[in-house]
Length: 192
Image (cartoon, rainbow, N blue to C red; front, side, top):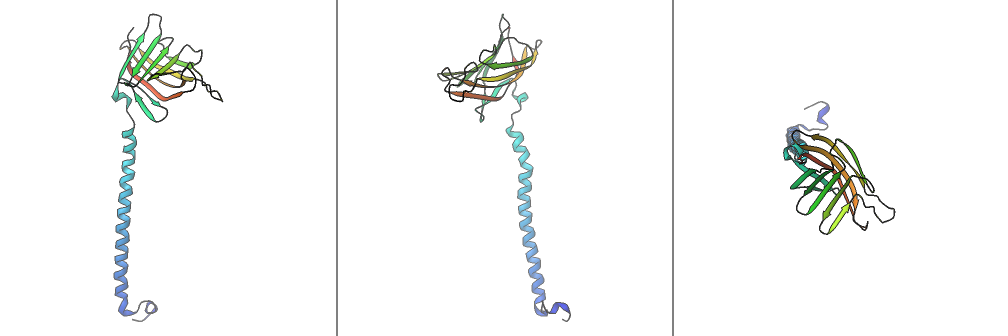
């Protein structure tokens, strides 16, 4: 073989080079294919993981739940809502370990502020400890019991409630702290 390639590929070894090249490309493409398929499967299943982790509130209707201390989904298994003769709305729920009571001055759509001296309050009792948004912390710097309840819907025909809440609360001594975020109550029946 003559020409410019004879310097690099002597005639007797050029066919071995092409066999090596074909094998090399085949191995790389199969490794790339396996790598690609593995990550393609991961990319396709990732959205499903997020969708399956998210609890669809409307399918677990009625519900009364919240994110306790930022990492535990507290969900009541027993729940009641009552509008008293004075107009005060009381929502309570328990999961068998802890009991939450939301008390609002009226059963009307609106935003209700929580904190010391506010007419709206949330208490949570777990074991022998009761946390309340009416209590403030005693540690320095002083942290306040606070939060908000949003009553989004009061359906007087079906007698159901819909709303959301979050709060920071303390025990009576102000030394133990409890936080709830992403709280919701949905399609919750009330009696008056």
